[in-house]
Length: 120
Length: 387
Image 1 (cartoon, helix red, strand yellow):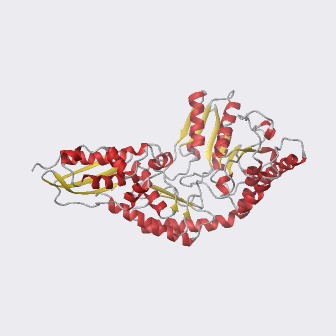
Image 2 (cartoon, chains in turn purple, cyan):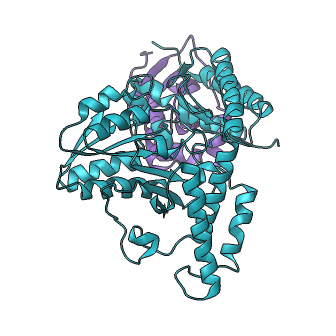
Image 3 (cartoon, each protein chain N blue to C red):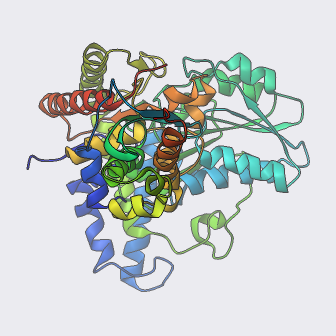
């Protein structure tokens, strides 16, 4: 049902944790599935230097959060804002159609965190 | 890698060696169609007759009351549709409960939506045990069929079918019982039960998939829905699944003979597993009555984790289980059974069902408990704090 890459991100999630001095953060939820994702970002001149997250959700929700955190580190905020769900899906070897909400959750967390970030 | 641990016996069971051995000749040398005239075909016919006698004896029924089908879903459909159509001149009202299997619920909903019947679904209290009074309150003078399962497939709760049957039949309704999960776990003697129609399925008691039984008590107003050839005394057309029928009978015979000892063994394992989960995993909620439940069923909700994530985490550790979470079924809504008991959405999503069987022992449960504890702790450590 799930690709090995996805299961690897689920079993060994990257960049899990919290940040006390985050420059941006957001918590997003998918009420249907009950998935919850909290994202913290550290920025330096609008470049994402570090991403940390915590999630409570189904398998692809956790894997997508993990992959997203790897993809956005080093990206300029404007590029991270443009991150597509397909990029996240590709990084975890694809996601079943009915699990697309996991990608949207990760993508929404990035967008909301960056839009609401503290102005520097 | 350690041997995997199968804890999903309510989903299906492996075919026992004795059952495979009994079936083998009918898949090879005795393959002939039992409706044919030559001697090998007559041997196949005789095997079906013997199987019918065995099944009847196991259930306290007459051989003429036993119809072989393709399994639980067909038996449920045939029982309910057959009694509803046969009773249509008397009434068009159907009664069932909120925790039935979809094979019953969807059959009744289909009769209501497309065939002009009316359906009342009786509520079920948080214990998961149907109150005969709730069924009684749903009855009307025009109620033709009442269907209540003997034991629930998700939470294992055992229903007072004798009491409910007396209430239903007292009002003139035909009483159907889905005994798919109960077979082999609970004593079934139809001589002393107010049951008109009963469904069972071989693969739940170490028989093959694709074969089941529909019991129709003599004199019950019931019409066949599968028509064609004259098999099963014109009550279920279609060439008989001879090997499957032979396997079902052998599996049932073994299950009934071993029932008491095996049920006691499983109940002790179940109690150990349930107690240990509650002890080791803080916040665990037990779903369904703790006592009036199948000897092999454990169903809990573990707050703060997602059922699907627990299942996949267990699977990666070689442990097979199931959940009522929506994510595992492909539907948007979590288990209708857990929701009917009043469980909130998040707890229904966080449910875990472990169902034990012949192969399991204490050592396996200890390994499963360690794995479960590890998976839950890991998932909880990923989880953001509740705002």
